[in-house]
Amino acid sequence: MAYNFAAVDREQLLLMPPSVAEWLPEGHLAWFVIDVVAELDLSAFLAGYRADGRGGAAYDPQMMLALLVYAYSVGERSSRRIEKRLVEDVAFRVVAANQQPDHATIARFRATHETAIAGLFGQVLALCARAGLLRPGLIAIDGTKLNANASRDASMTAEQIAAEILAEADATDAAEDAAQEADRSDHHGDADGGLGNRSGRRARLRALLDELEAEAAEKSYEAHLARRAEKEAATGKPIRGRRPTPGSATHKSRQRANVTDPDSRLLKTKDGYVQGYNVQAVSTADQFVIAAEATNLAMDAPAYAPMVAAAKTNLKAAGERRRVRRVVADAGYWSVDNVALKGVESFIAPGRARQLKKIAESEQARTEVLDRVQTGELDTLAAAEQLGVTRARVNQLLRRRRAGDPDPLTTTMIAKLDTPHGRSTYKKRAPSIEPVFAQIKHNRGIRTIARRGLTAADSEWKLICATHNLLKVYRLA
Image (cartoon, rainbow, N blue to C red; front, side, top):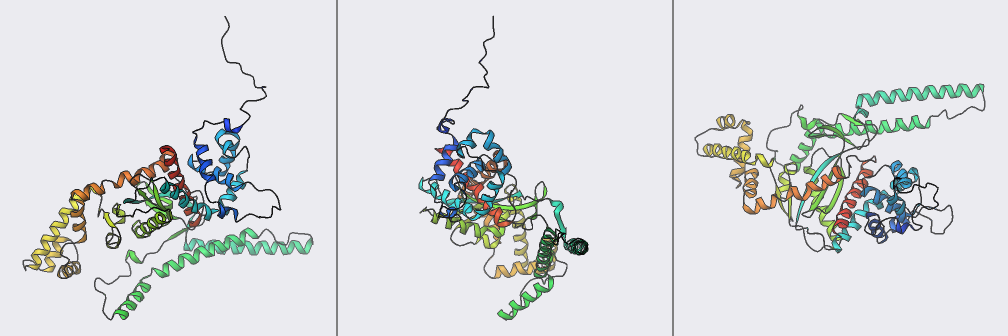
């Protein structure tokens, strides 16, 4: 009795349906991406091409954009791997209409149109708004660290960069001498001597050294004193509080710069330090990203106001009429200016959520000590010893009380978060923004910014967030 196996005939003339429209099921993500890109305004992409039809034929930018969007949607960002999948993956072949642009063409398209690609985020957001998917009354803001396309080992101090510049100069001089000697003995020698790369590298190193020196001068103790004196002269009053000291960490500038990607920074994470970017995102309660920006800031707090403003601008441009009213953020965004930001109600934890009770108890103890100082039971020196702060700090807290601000901002915010309204509002922070980063970093495996430079990183991060929104629309549909 013979085995009953399906016949294997590799000489068969047709292995797939004759039409690419039959290669994938109707509801496949590839068809959704093709349909969405077909509805976008591609004028910014077309501006870079000749309109007279002359010259060699270029790949259709609509096809190239659809290919890029689909690749990012499935977590594929390497131009070489995209080129490979254009041969092996049916969905990629459908998106590219069976055309096979090589990795260099894909990389050039992404670099040439980085501004237009960044603008794609706004168009996708408008699509979400028209579908009625955005509920921006409450938004959450957070940041995450992504690795740069650069090694930590490529970071150098100012002294190392200066030494490298001298070494490059010596190498260039030696090569020029060798080229001149060869030219005298052989008139058809290479007069350039291959110096283009050396001189270019030296220029980049010089720019990097200048950047480090300028930053050091800007943050120096002397510059701080000069700005302080200028402010006192303008107001006619001395600035209160502790005077700056030369050894303060405030006056320490960046010690190292990365030669591979100078815009990237050494950033601290819970798992240690990474060479990368601090990317920011603002999302609605339904996890739609309404603002995205790549930064190289070590701290999140300075990005709070710009991101809230960007969210409002993006929503207005997308045609969304509902306003942003409440903003929730974790302790990384805690600052006086952020809490008091006009136009929105801010819910920012002054510490880790699980430590708020302990912080509240500490603030209550401090309030009791200050009450005793005001009633004359304690002097400021004894109060400073009990609180573990300087006497100047105690006097500063007392002045705030006399000015009509009896409770510190921390106490006020903790009390606000402890109300039913505050608890229910802040409880929405994590489920609004954390799944966005989980979907991007874990589900799609995007933990690195593939491109170099802050502008390129920002363009790529906006594309990543735009595809996040597209995936949500696709799943809802």
